[in-house]
Image (cartoon, rainbow, N blue to C red; front, side, top):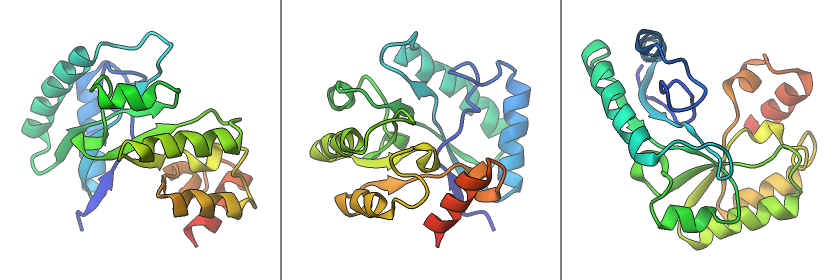
Length: 188
């Protein structure tokens, strides 16, 4: 079965916290494809106030990476997006095309500080919805304001129109007892 889509990863070489070695990146793509992932959206980080890379540089680098991937992992669909760390300027940056949505869609992978207040998260999600974007909250298991038994806040975000993304480590039980228990509760 090859119907899985990976919407959050950092295997895109040279764009952020991934290794520069193309061969290692291709091996990771091959492993994902062998495990049933048919589509991967590469999501390098975007942080507004830290040494971000030029968007045209990221796009050019991606095209090179995609070209190599098409040769070595035929059948894998590779797209570009970004994991966007929330800042108040983010809606404008999205509208101005200075940052990327997921595969040029209306979906936005957004990350907040783990210690964000729920009201600030709710405001950020609302701002993204106001520009007709569909926010996907990255690392849902990491936020203290949502953690463990705060299902009311989770339901509030869902009802607003936000989607939730949990790390595979939390789903598989490799990220610690509390995060794993919380993630399993969300999955149920």
